[in-house]
Amino acid sequence: MWRAFRVVAASGLIVTLGCGPAAPKNAYTLHGQVLSVEAPRKTLTIKHDQIQGLMPAMTMPYTVRDEKLLNGIAAGDLVTATLVLESNDAYLATVTKTGSAPLEPAPPDAPMPAPPAVKLLQPGEEVPGARFVDQDGRARTFAAFKGAPVVMTFIYTRCPLPSFCPLMDRNFAKMQASFKQDPSFARVHLVTVSFDPERDTPSVLKAHARELHADLTRWTFLTGNRDDIERFAAGFGVAVSRAVNDPRDITHNLRTVVVDSDGRLVKTYNGNDWTPQQVLADLRPLAPRA
Ligand SMILES: [Cu+2]
Image (tube, rainbow, N blue to C red; front, side):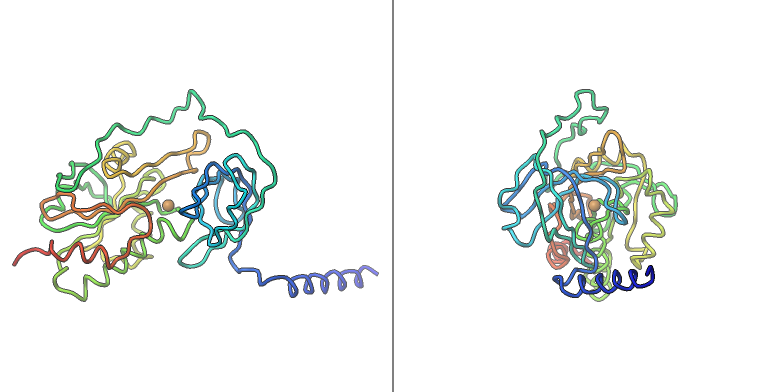
């Protein structure tokens, strides 16, 4: 009897899977509350619970490919959504409203320091000095990169979404490959700064660099004192917030900057939709004069 039942159950499972829409391989279910909806950018920010097998509780912006999924979804809605991860992208394939709840006001006594009151650097302005520690544990200053154009971005290695920090890494790896093929980029240096220095220690960054096949003579990974890094990063518009009760819950934006060989800001890219080709075009006029 028991054996027969198991066979039926097993075949029932096969039938269910076989008849459903092709389930994406890397699909995860998330439950959370919508904090904001940005329809023009097909984006909604969701504060969600742990996603089993993928990431801890987190507040993240997620995109949808089908904007109709955002119809009727508003801030405060409780939702269940399907997050699909592809090697180069992440998007929500379903968003289902399950209820709604008042949005939690920010706790009045949140120990989160206000974002450092840092003036946003303008093109032509010199990047302020800052101290870091590199992937080999050596003290580095930003000023030491002077003499070569620099492309710099800000990430954390545990970022779970392929379209965020890991995309910055992939773009940098592509640029590194282009630099090797074109002598006019011979002296350009890549710099990746982690804004999660507690976890991104020099040895973690070193392993990360190895995974990316980074040539450490051309690409430096920096960590250091968290407050110093946040202040430095804020000058470029990088905003990082960490949940009060779970500092692993990092919400962040993306900024990638081009700095000339005199250490002056040339250009800032916001977000994740810049391409290596755009940055190479920015670098061409900066190539060091012979
Ligand atoms: Cu990230």
